[in-house]
Image 1: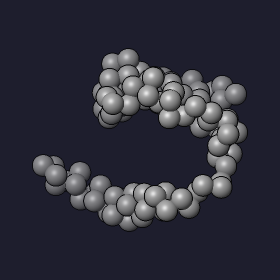
Image 2: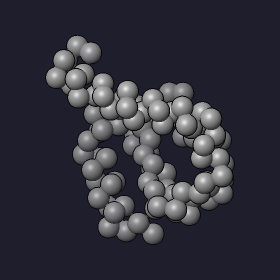
Image 3: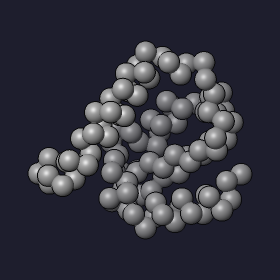
Length: 101
């Protein structure tokens, strides 16, 4: 909120999309839905408490919920991965888009 230009862009997104979607997720709106789009999820290895071990515990059987899902980890990134390691995120993403299977 220290940068009004960014805050004015992010505030409507959070208010109109993120919050309503979070409420739907908390009400189990997607419990019986399956993710069919190939999906890459990237985590920063310095994002505590979401360590790679914890993610593995939380997502024990991702194929139960998704047709094609992959997890990738970036060593020198925490929660804001695109800020911490933009080059690595771009490399992983572009490589994955070239070879999604």
